[in-house]
Image (cartoon, rainbow, N blue to C red; front, top):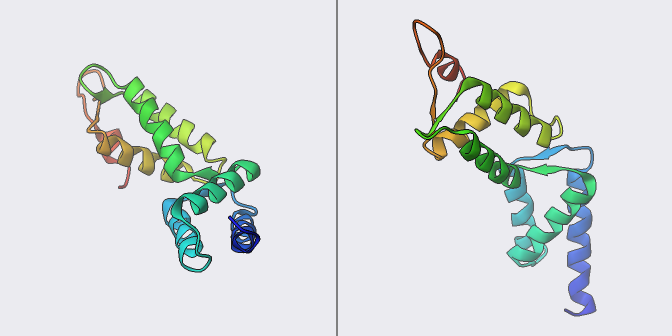
Length: 144
């Protein structure tokens, strides 16, 4: 890499810092727009642009949805029972984990929606609750 190659990289790094300033969470769409900007406008490779975003996010303590989704998927797999079902308490724990890792950049209902989406991606089902009449109403009440 020559000195002239460092100029767009440095400019892009500053743009990323500016976009992350004051944020706690960066969703996939926002990350995609930043990546596109690095590729098209600054001529960076995808790996370079992604690396600069990750470095700036780590430095500014901003959670990236893609990385957060990976750790939450692992948590959901761990919490699921042998029949690939998740109890309501475990779902609530996973949603709280997601929200905490997002640094408060995601509301409780949004965290629940995102965890529900991850459950569906993993083909996990909700475990019915109740003593006499067991149902999944708690799960269905979460808007998709």
